Amino acid sequence: MLRTPFHLVEYSPWPILISLSILSMPVGLVSVFKGGSPELLGFGVAMTAFISFLWWWDIVRESTYQGHHTTYVVLGLKNGMALFIVSEVCFFFGFFWAYFHSSLAPAVEIGSCWPPVGIHCLNPFQVPLLNTSVLLLSGVSITWAHHSLEEGRRKEVLTSLALTAALGVYFLFLQYGEYCETPFSIADGVYGSVFFMATGFHGMHVAVGTLFLLVCLLRQWQFHFDQNHHVGFLAAAWYWHFVDVVWLFLYVSIYWWGS
Picture 1 (tube, helix red, strand yellow):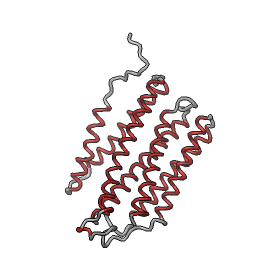
Picture 2 (cartoon, rainbow, N blue to C red; picture 1 turned 180 degrees about the vertical axis):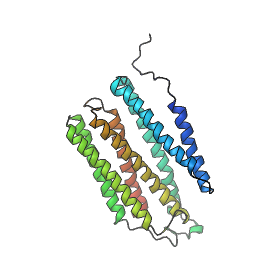
Picture 3 (cartoon, rainbow, N blue to C red; picture 1 turned 180 degrees about the horizontal axis):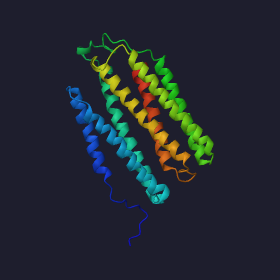
Picture 4 (cartoon, rainbow, N blue to C red; picture 1 turned 90 degrees about the vertical axis):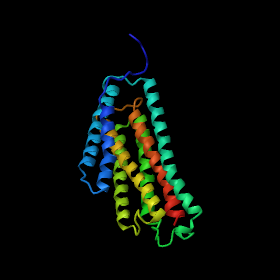
């Protein structure tokens, strides 16, 4: 039998099934935009969530109960998460490029000024500043959880993870209220398009990160993490710090400088 420090995964139906379920989401969304029924979109979202749960549970079983995640596997997972965050940086870089391309040299079509004529920007020192404070505080709490986990203080890990997830939910609540009161829409030229695309995708990342933290909270409650083996928590912490940094750039460039 071939001996290797890497874990050779078993045959799994989840990759092909989740690919089909993810494919059904944009197809269903286009159907909704064209006046169709939302059943395909709802099916895609539900199946993606369900298959993700089953796939993640297989990974938890392989790592926690079967011990297949050796140091080589853990290193590969860390490198994979780092590359994923790099891809996310490139994703948001496109939005910032579009924003500064239009704001540093405003075209004649938008009045040769920035913000465009007719756009009333949000006050950066009201809800956006509060949102910034909330995310900065969540960055402190997730760091608290990390240090507590490395020092074996289980109760503090549970408390700080719950606090971080609660701050993520509060951020989404504040952003939803901000969207309800925004005096422009995504259809209002390049400013509205870039604003809602950039902040909306960031909000989606906050929602995913909050779910990530809740899963880590549940796993910590079930004693899945210890001082030496907690790569799942590390992935969630790295992702959350990335979300924090992106928001700081969004706040400074779009909310403060752009107004």
